[in-house]
Image (cartoon, rainbow, N blue to C red; front, side):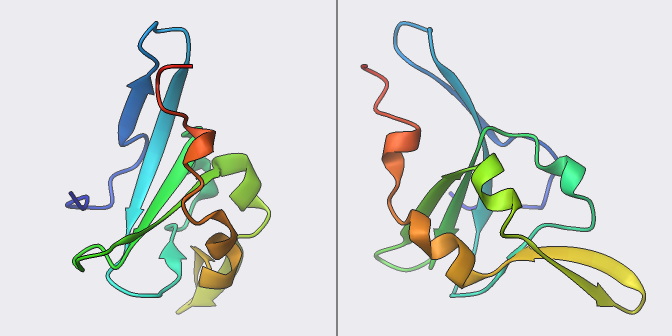
Length: 108
């Protein structure tokens, strides 16, 4: 389900079945091939992983899964009306298509 608003912080917390491994996930949902908006403060990127769901309302949505630290160096800074904003361009997240091994299946 797409997130209903752009809330700060972690969206999902997952645990392995044995509760040894935990991941925090920030979800970004897009309806088409657009940059991912990251607001105006990168300190809000506190989750372990980022899941980008593109074409979220289509029959076959696309998913991109990356460690937050891996995408931080790819984020672009912009200025509009003297306000700073950050975006992750499609070319900078498309390397992470269906990269579910970062999260795992919960059984290992």
